[in-house]
Length: 262
Image (cartoon, rainbow, N blue to C red):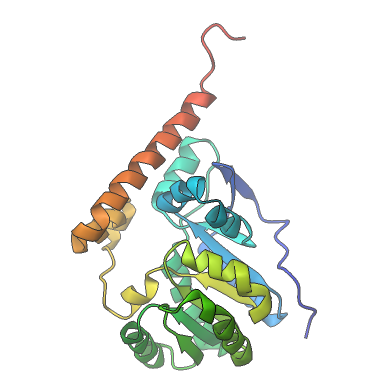
């Protein structure tokens, strides 16, 4: 077994958007890096950003610090890909958190990965466990914990995760709670790969429907979610999408040559 240490990403191109270093990687490249990290018992924390998280990082210093502490930061939202191209710093493709999770399950089924699930409700975790057993029987489920616990319980939960010795920890909690948990405890739990998956467990368990591919390609996955939970989500997406659009326009204006300059 190799020595434990952070994954080296010096050869991976980075595109800086809104002062966030986003790694320019395709899905299969990320999955290969995950395989390598687990094989050598390294350490890699994966962060993903979409328009809403980029907006929230501007006003939440702890969230920003937690995301920037990730070893690998990926573009989850299609709007981030579009922004990268408009601003001349193109990213190759979207690496959505839920798609990355599914890729981990497929690779894990081939390699017998040990997975710990943290977050969501007990009902959702039951659905995740059942579907994992049915669709990916070679994935070893070594533990689970719902996401509804007080802060004073975090240390005990971190100790339980460490004792289970998973290869991958999936954290299905909302931002910024998941980023903050990983920032506090990733060193203690000693898991090779940590990935915050947000609401992906709800989709995987069948509680929430994911947008059809056509909606995803048009960048309207957020609107499909609003359609399912309008009262809870419409205001959130209206505000964050508007602010993100303004941020992109501001960056574009900064790039325009001034009249009479030169």
